[in-house]
Every structure is written in C-alpha cells, then in structure tokens.
Length: 246
Ligand code: PEP
Image (tube, rainbow, N blue to C red):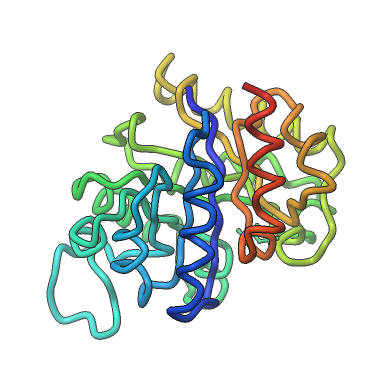
C-alpha cells in the first residue's frame, strides 16, 4: 500500500493560496507517497488545474446525487472538478453539523459511486477516552460509518482523536498504536485481507517535530494534517518524514 499524507485546509485559503499547492507540487514532484491537499470548495476547481502529482480532495459531500440541497456539493461535482477524494465525517462536521455515522455511511456510498476515495474520519472525545470508551467508540464508528458495500480500494480511514485536533495535544505512542491496531483488526474482520491495503492515517496536531515518531508506529500509514498543512514550510517536512519510511 502507498503511504498517504493529506492536508485539510478547512475554511482557510483564498485564490493566492493556490501558490502553496503549486509550490508543494513542484517540491514533491517525484514523491514515493501519495500527497493530497483538501482546499475549501471554492478553490477545488483551480487547485485541480495545477499540474503535478499532488492529489486534490474535497472536505465533504452530500449523500444525494443532486437536487434541492442549497449550499451542498454532490460527490459527482467534486469528481467533475478533477478531484479524486473527499474527507467524510470529520469531527468538525460531526460536531458543527450534527453529522451521524449513518450520514457518513451514506456519503461514503455517494463518494465511492462517483469514483472518489472516501477518507472516513473517526475518533473519540476526551470524555470518552477518560471513561475508557475509546475502542468501543472506534468500533461503533467503523461499523456504522463504513457501508457493507464499501470498495476497500477507494477507502482511507483517519483516526483523529477529537481532543487532539488543533489543540497541540497528542496521544502517547502507545495510545496511537493501540487505536490503529484496533482499527486494522476491526477492518480485517469486516473486509477480509483487502483491509490490509486500506491506509490508516493518524490525525491530530501532527507537526514536523512529532511526525517521525508517529510515522514509525505500526499500522500508521500516513497522516491527516490540519494547521500544519497550510504552509509548505510546515507541510513539506511532514511529507519528507513519511517518505523516509518507504
Ligand atoms: C484535522 O483537521 O483533521 C487535523 C488533524 O487538524 P490539526 O492537524 O490542526 O490538529
């Protein structure tokens, strides 16, 4: 499986930020890993016009093919821009837009039907971790957010502890390793050996200074990066750290 590092720009970036994508595309033209930027929807089309080996993804899609859903974007529209993936079930969507596992599952079906890779995000809150519920939460989210008919070749799972996103706090190596091993075995039970090819990303305050030790962990196949993906100066060393593992 190719290792995978994705940058989630969230609600950041105007047209001049496209230069950052161009800079990354040039700097990592011969990368031996998959690199993706998920800019806001307003930049998707232009970002896809930038030549290079960088992948471009969206940050959400609607589960319906088309219709009366003001402000929403269909998976086919994302594919039509030239993007190849979409982040689904990010904790900020789950929190700010009350997205449930069932909604994430329906979006995953829609994304894959449009030929997009679904980057499905799961992760526990601090309260859930402190109550010892982490693995149960991950199991429920994996079971309910990933549809039975999933195409494993178009699936990436991102383990993102909610309390580590944008906070500078990160789990211990043991906690990350435990969560990733659990996700792998749960996916293996569900999907069989094809689950070995589903990249498992860690997300939550990944920076140049901690990337090496996170990427050294078993079953960590890359990262979903928020804040540190906004500037090539911060993101490039993370890309290099992942590349150093292959
Ligand atoms: C994210 O948005 O998915 C994320 C992991 O953010 P950050 O890297 O800023 O914690």
